[in-house]
Amino acid sequence: MYISETKIRVRYAETDQMDVVYYGNYAQYFEVGRVEAIRQLGLSYKDMEAAGVILPVVEFTAKFLRPAHYDDLLTVKTALKEMPADHRILFHQEVFNEAGKLLTVGKVLLYFVKKGTMEKTTMPAYLEEKLAAYF
Image (cartoon, rainbow, N blue to C red; front, side, top):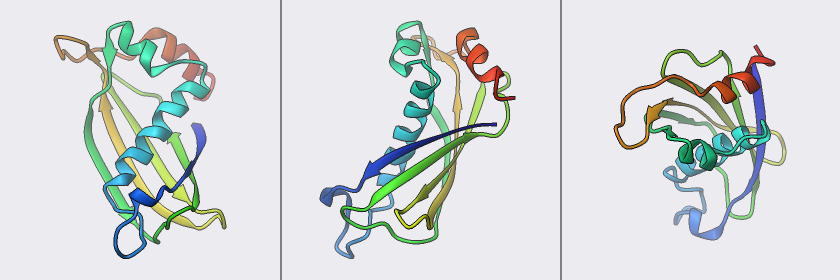
């Protein structure tokens, strides 16, 4: 299993009138977690795109357990519980507050596709090599 952690500070503009992080912002928090998880492997999502492979989101789920508020320092935990297979990669994500309380859980399914044609493809070999050590 591969696990990565990323810190994000809640900005004022990300909260609603109830002083709670607006639910739509979790898609961005999860994205930051995924991009940083790839970066922590020594790779860059930007470089993957430049090499012709992109990762569109095809499913996104989230369950909100507790609220986050302005200026909270959040930890986004991103995990790959299984080695990506075929054209699919499934990220399991959790968001914790500074006290270590679990706020949100979710899953994001993405496909490896060829840039330009959007044809499904397999995981790039260089990403597979990096992940192999964790499975």
